[in-house]
Length: 461
Ligand code: ADP
Ligand code: ASP
Ligand code: MG
Figure 1 (cartoon, rainbow, N blue to C red):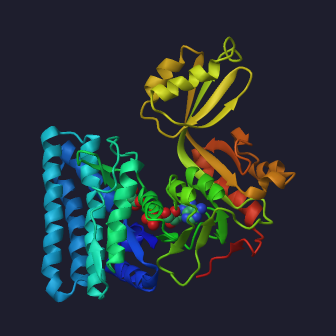
Figure 2 (tube, rainbow, N blue to C red):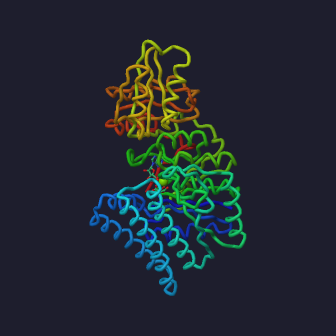
Figure 3 (spheres, rainbow, N blue to C red):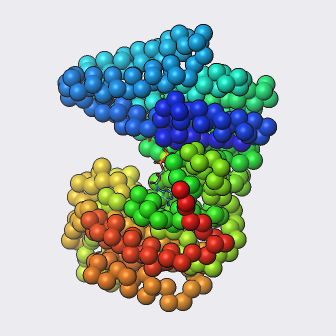
């Protein structure tokens, strides 16, 4: 069995879904399980509908909802066989009716609670999976849509629910294996799950990659394929550096660092389940299926290049605490981190000096409470609109002189919180958000102007 996950652009319309069908058709003998995201822009659109409803802005809400509805019906009419068109329309209609019911509830409450937000945004995947299953049937592939919610058990931390693996793993294994053994291609949803009492949850934005890996590990798949809109994992985000090159093979450790530090092509948690079962993960381009993608394996062949890729994470906040009195007192850092723990706020990077500690945060929902509690330790200052830049490569630790190659091209750019060593394969630092694109371009020029063809491949159109 393999798991094939298709992201938003890979199901964005009937043309994309037809491409998906042909990609899966070529792999039928490997017993695929297909997991899909919502059509591109639909999750955001649905969340906008929820917010606009709460604000009482019915006109704008309607316009957005009509647009989402029209895209789905259009794709349905293009994809379904004539005698299935009506039943597919009815299935979509039933899903939209459910959505309207939830929007009614939001209207009544005049606010979007996290639970209602999930009940709305889950519709994107529930709808797209109806279309994809119908497209398989239209192409003569025996397929069945599976609502993953009763299988993908989570806690009730809505909008970023954690998986209850003890419950979910056996349920996923049983349900998907049974369908595959019956000769069917199961089509299911990424991103969504449900609580023990049946309330819909989502596992965090971009979470469909993670869903695919959870399913893959549960069924002991031989491969997990992430089909997206780029040729693979690249030396950096091609939206910033169009000449970014494809990485042929990368290790789980390297790819995890990149995902964690902002390489959006993979949700940060994706590789965890795959690593536990040592299942290779491939990133492939659904628009160019003939191109070999990136293989993410437990061990990548050692590269000549010190750096494999550059990732960046924007919208970061830095919190500094200066305290002459307490800093070197034992137990100080423990008490400091206890504050973050109490407010459920994760810290990404830490830098300390004799009299101060700096930390980066991604999630600032509880920032005011964190700052209030930190003030008892010393003077607290906050820097907003920062970004982390992170260079990753397993050869880094064997490469002398690397620091000057990293920092020389960045002259005139303010750099803080330099960190290397926590993981020997990662060097990261903080810059102002406004200069992140320029800094990444210069670093890319420095490290990837000449490419070792054993490790990288230029992307040609
Ligand atoms: P999907 O909808 O298929 O999940 P995403 O938009 O979530 O697709 O992720 C793919 C995007 O990730 C690419 O279009 C690219 O702009 C971005 N990206 C960021 N960093 C990288 C990287 N290092 N390699 C490839 N893509 C990257
Ligand atoms: N559709 C969801 C999102 O936009 C999940 C995903 O695409 O992975 O966040
Ligand atoms: Mg994604």
